[in-house]
Image (cartoon, rainbow, N blue to C red):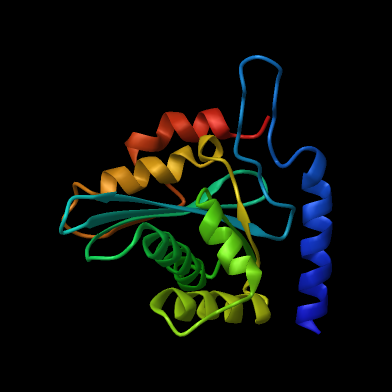
Length: 194
């Protein structure tokens, strides 16, 4: 029952975003803004930043409601050796875990990692680390926890990118509920729906 509803919702979501794409675009200077989900859903934006040979990964995730209100944020710091694509997949699965832990469901996931979003939506998991993570994400979609994983341009994902960069310099994970760190305050205000 959940799977047919999820597929129908996803098709409606894609159809609605074909024209506006959740973006405000003008001729000349491009203006791209974060777009809130419909009432009754949450939106999770995720991003990663990788640095160095040892590879330090900063993960940022933001959960907002249909009014654009900040419900929760996280910035996580990891030291692992993984590919960029695997790091982006890890950010998405951590974002999902964060929304489950925060009881902010059902949710839509947005990432600016187009190849990762395409890989997840292709439905072709394999027996690699990336394939197992994609399989876990697919399970959350089947269960109705996550409605869709979609691509968003980096300009509409600036808050999470800033959190991911901040995570590179922290030595422990940080979480905020219904508030946000000062480093993203201006960005949140600029993205706030009119």
